[in-house]
Length: 314
Image 1: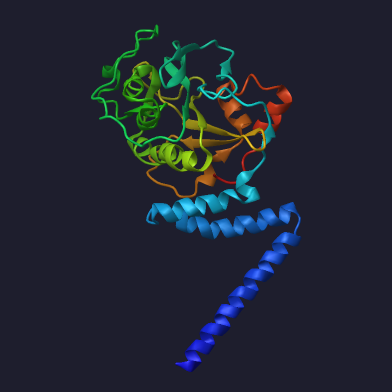
Image 2: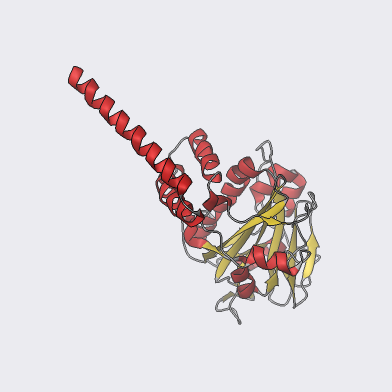
């Protein structure tokens, strides 16, 4: 027994020495060296926080640890404080086509009547009680649009009616009336069931739960990517080739904005714990969609915010 305690003591000492050595190396390294070490450490941490079985308290603690690393914090671009009540922090996405902008209680939509399809949706989420009313039973035609898409156009199509502004996030943050408006068909696109109920839902839940807990108010802009012309249609409705999501948050202490963009292929993708594989630059999303994000920011700020992809998923 004494030998066992001696062995455990030596192992503990070795662990402490290793930890101290790594800490000294980290502090003495330049920024690129620290980021490389953080990547390796987060590879291990992500195995715990993203496996789907770790307790929420453990995941939350590891999220906050990860947020202290330079690789997750990323580049914070100095910018004026955004309108806290806006659905997009520095203006809705703009488009050369001239989309119909539809304002709802909890979100806004840029609608293309010619496609016909929403091209983007913007919404804001924030700390909330996490209680939603019962999910509405049906989808509704939006009479404000010229296209007036009906729910029957999706019947037996093989695709879900996929929300852009999500039902649950709008419900818990903006209330039951706002939740019902997410079922307007101006907010809906054809989406494969595996993606709609799987990876895409995981991203939506990650934002309204984990991101909000970590950062407070979060702005989300989301939409489809279409080929020109659309490679597939169900009736007159175009089927997206991919989906994008731009997430931003304002750091009040540092008086700056930071953002991350995800680009997800339209595939039957139920789960994926390695979200970094979907991280792209906002400029990449602009190239694929023809949209211009954060139009109220000076061009130099836009360039800095949009040109480089985040190093790792938040």
